[in-house]
Amino acid sequence: MFPDMETSPGPKETILVVDDEPANIELLHEVLQDNYHVLFATNGRQALEIATRQIPDLILLDIMMPEMNGTQVCIELSLDAKTREIPVIFVTALSGAEEETAALEIGAADYITKPVNAGIVMIRVRNQLEIKQCRERSERLYRAYQALLEHTGEMILMLNRQGEIRELNPAAQSGLILDPPQVIGDNWNGLFSQADEGARVIQEIQSQGCFVGEVSLKQSDGTILPVQLSCYTQMDPEGEEELIVCHGKACPA
Image 1 (cartoon, rainbow, N blue to C red):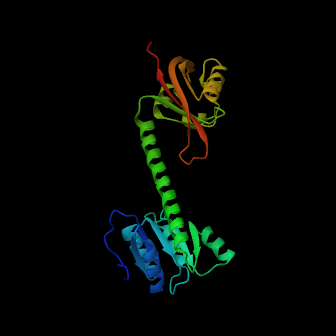
Image 2 (cartoon, rainbow, N blue to C red):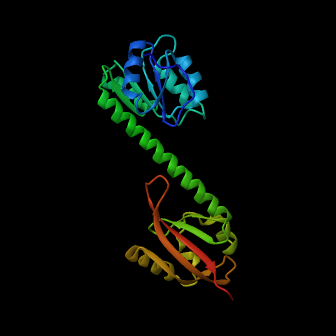
Image 3 (cartoon, rainbow, N blue to C red):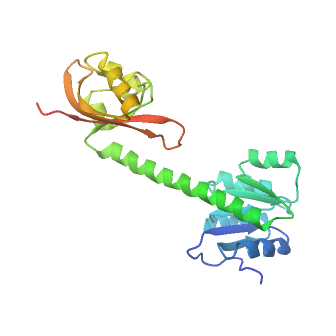
């Protein structure tokens, strides 16, 4: 049975299949229907309209279509803030390395050649949806953490493994009387009243995985500020670099 062109999405993830050949849509619908809610479009303009309105979780896109081909559709999707994050997998009879390279260069997430293999389609679709879910989860956590940085009364500093300051929150800026543009990229040793104290903290974090203790930080006006410091390591939101995160509270006078 030919799939509905556009119906209200259910709890399943939604996949938009775009192909000018109904037989290809029916084939992909048969492969996907048990696990996903499937929409379809038979030309590029229709695909853009449905993608903008429904925001599918993934698009399976043919390249060779009349009037507006899949490459043009992919570029248009990437230019719209509402659709640019939707992963696109090209499904095409073009099997040359040059065509595949060109598709990936314009932003396609993956490339499947026709005739399609049902098992390969399911694995590629699942892989891209899992990547999308991980990215969205990471972005949510990052936004929540950024909100914490902005609103907590604790001083929070982020450093790389060498002790260079990557970020500091408003509480750290005001508590230490620091101007972020002047200290981002500097080694945090300059924040301590004793030059070797920052290096000692970094060494303990690297050997023990964390540090908890009282340190003496130096405000920009020279005033010494006793601080209870708690530091640990975590990966940055992109998962590319291990950072040192330090939370500090000024000790009671």
